[in-house]
Length: 285
Image (cartoon, rainbow, N blue to C red; front, side, top):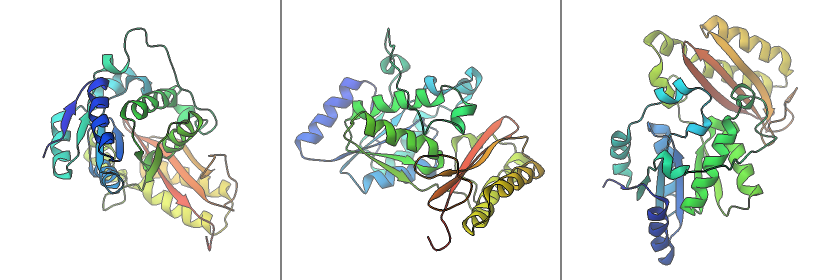
């Protein structure tokens, strides 16, 4: 059954109110559409935790640094609704920009610390846009649970921080990255890759996993990270933005693995920016 498509906050809150009156828990899965199996895995995680599930579909202009990137982002609402139908999602919330950011909108949610460096350094203002729209979606949906993918690991930590700091009564659930058979992380941006770029793309995952194994064994980070950058360039990536080892909770830089860490990378293939990350645990951890 296809989900009900709602476009206003008033409609959404009225629907949630009826669920609340019935004593049902509500989960939300925020997305920008162009749904793939990674998104659907978030929906499955939401369904396992709540009686009612909302999927939001909103291409958020405030988190794009580049107008052409925003214009090129795929908008596939009908296909997205069809993909959600077999999962029995209750509501697809798909507001217009004017509904989300009305006349005179002048508030920005900015999270410091975990937003510094990595994508935060290379996409100025991006996480302010993410934090602002996610804060709104959590409050609009009044959800008990919100599911986000670990593929966007820095984003996940930003969301956890804002929910805690703003006392939003929601459990933020991080869900494992879904990968293709060749371990390329699923992303809506993958459709932009040319056949040759798609052949090269899995190297980012391979190099991440290989590097994580070396770091987990106790190797100092500096030489491993430098070698990984060279390997990405040799594999055919045009530009490596970052390849870094960070603490898994604070995202502070780490020189050697002593506790749970995360290895994160961003690199360009042609006009497509790919990001990925993998966990790194010390040997025996």
